Amino acid sequence: MRARCLFWLAVAVFAPAPARAQVVGEVLPPWTQGTLDIHQISTGRGNSALIIFPDGTSMLVDAGAISGKNPRYVAPRPDDSRSPAEWIVRYVLEMLKRDPVPALDYALLTHFHSDHIGQILEDSTLSKSGQYRLSGITEVGEHIPIRKILDRGWPDYQYPSPLEDRNVKNYRAFLSWQAEHNGMRIERFQPGRNDQITPVRAPRQYPNFEVRNLMANGEIWTGVGTNTRQEFPPLNDIPAGDRPNENMCSAGFHLSYGSFDYYSGGDIPGIPFEGYPSWHDVESPVAQAAGPVEAALLNHHGYLDSQNAFFVGALRPMVWVLNVWESAHPTGRVYHRLQSTRIYPGPRDIFATNMHDANLLVVVGLDQLKSSHGHVVVRVAPGGSSFRVIVLDDSAETYKVKSVHGPYQSR
Image (cartoon, rainbow, N blue to C red; front, top):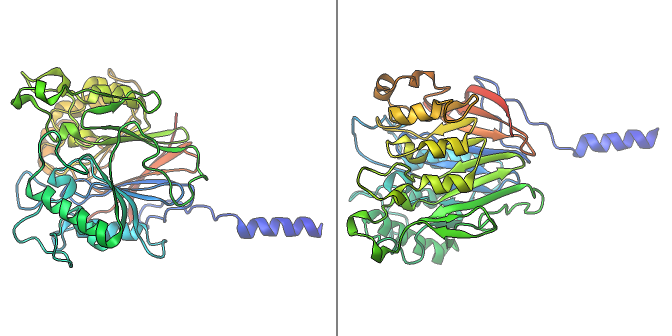
């Protein structure tokens, strides 16, 4: 009897504490071991997501920062007292505060537009080193160590044409300095691989967790092994006006944890503009590789060239997350396709980070969103069998829960 009592006492002492429930009006309970968190951060100035793997490995996907006042843009969140990247930094540090020295194990930049990497102006603040200016990912990296960064262009940044704008030049200066002085590793994002982004805290503890690189630069995973195919014709065979643009070259990935699947694809388009070649539709071949998922991030913020019917029907998620911050995000036809039970049956819930008030008036049905403002957190239970969506207040740094949705059962 005494031995049995000692056994159960040991279980009580060493077993991990159960996760605290999410309660509306209270602060979001911290991530716990075995849980997968996907945070779509709301700043009103571009895209940024923090993903915490089941073992605690962290990855930032994009760090957008656009500047200027424009009636098409929503107001910065929580406000304009700090730069967008500062708000991202503070959010990340809050969510990683359980680490003695918070750091990002990975940062992935889907492509090189300012709402994904940061916008550099003439008066942008210089880094402490004086070698680059601060905005977006360079500002994040100034305050939080990044151990490995992946993008579609390293090391030469020549495809599909030389990338020589101010933002990319500044970013490359940041990479050079960080690699030399802080030991940051830089890699080209390679489609097809499932061993480039892996858990680093406890790599063998969660064998049912995987990040599969889906696409970049028109090279798309076939769904078989690590094989890929190039969907874009050779550049020499393409008229100058038809060449791939930056959005088309976006990097994207498929994340799986047990029976839970998630998709993120940058700004790839799926509906070529009139008169352009059919291969400008990047969504369709990507959808063939990705297949059905439980949750998906909207391509290109829901702009009019995105979310074609085949893509929507192939992924058919239970949850759509809309990273929006402009009056054209999303357009009415895009929203109609997301809702359409003719494209795929069954319920689906739609969450937006920062919907423009004008769009709420123009697009019929947007008032039916599960949430139109806030940080959107997809929290997946240990093992991946179920998940919840938690919306956090983005009007202040309270990290308080506005609403909780689910649990959804992974398929």
